[in-house]
Image 1 (cartoon, one colour):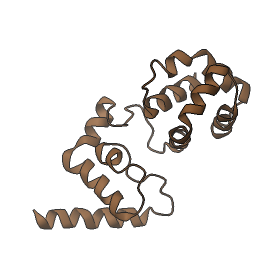
Image 2 (tube, helix red, strand yellow):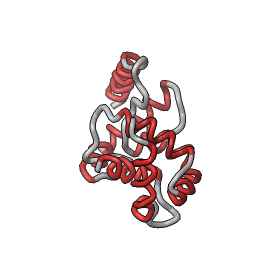
Image 3 (cartoon, one colour):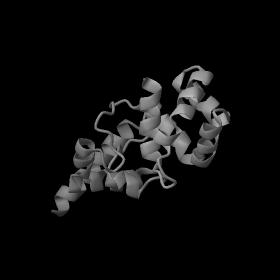
Image 4 (spheres, helix red, strand yellow):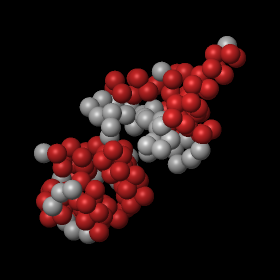
Length: 152
């Protein structure tokens, strides 16, 4: 068992190092990624990936849309991850701007999505209740809903 764990950790280190230049979030979704969210470095990434794979929760999350996973997500996910990262740090101001139908967060997101600022603001404003069905919304849910609304 110990050898299997060491081999898994070694594989994860090699994988992390081989993708380090291009990796934005190399751990993907799942319980491990949620548990070590916000931490950086090799060890937290290895722990996140190992947790995801050991318990099979990443596969479960992708299948059923739990643990921050999106069953309809794309593997590249660059834009969606950028939106998520931005909203994770600006959620309160984003809600204020969406309610007003204008603001800096909407301007920034329009730039990330390469969309017209007025279109982004209008769609978000019209869908405020969808984005924020209650005061305890999760940033992952808001990100997924926001991206779906912008795709329409």
